[in-house]
Image 1: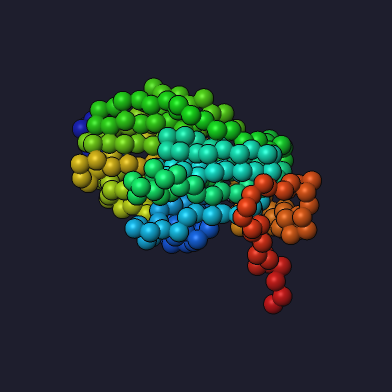
Image 2 (image 1 turned 90 degrees about the vertical axis):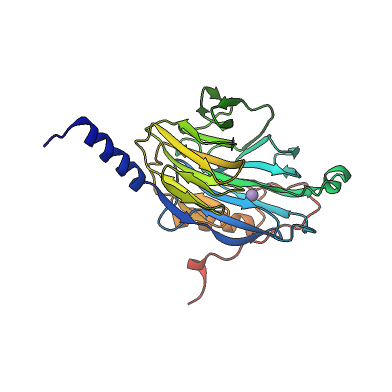
Length: 314
Ligand code: MN
């Protein structure tokens, strides 16, 4: 049965709205800082290759404890660090030492294994302005072709921006609104910060699934309201996404990619495919296997891995 074109349009518009789902994040603590974990979430491990999104924002806004995350390991993922405010120092087992500031990207790829530490730094000027670390710590699952390989660290400044009606985007990875990031990835994806002062209509790749993560203001994604601390899941098939902000201005993250074809296994700081791989990574960290996880130059204490649930006595 086929109906008039107008009805088809109305139907597809309605289905678009129905296709978007909202998931609430949950509170957790990392390095003495209260965070909001919005991915993974109930029934969803990945959005494209994005498999982990923590939003860092101090609870005690007037006098927060500094973020201090001591040396800890990763396998099978890339960490994507993006700050909205404040400064942090990254050190890792490759010998990297890098201060990161808002608008800059740290991309650390673990492959077979890496370890790193993150420490908030508070130059007098930023503390005087009342600026403390706020940002997003995100992970990308690595593909089969790279996850057993070598580790690397890259710091990117001057990521491209694009002006759009109602706002501006800065592209961390992939391309959006005509701006293309130089960051190399092993899977088709997009990651961008959106700053808007009015409604925007973002053109997106219909082969991608996406998440919209509001940071400081409530937004409306098509017809769906999304609060900060939650995310909107948008299935493939959309050629554009309309986002309205509640208030004069607001900031959100747009994350997406081709749906990841493999169901990953995540435990603690590891991304793998099987429990055996996770157990081996846990052992290698606990037994100080320096071939896999070399020492990290850091003043902070090494973080001990909890024993995996499946390794505990009944
Ligand atoms: Mn980490």
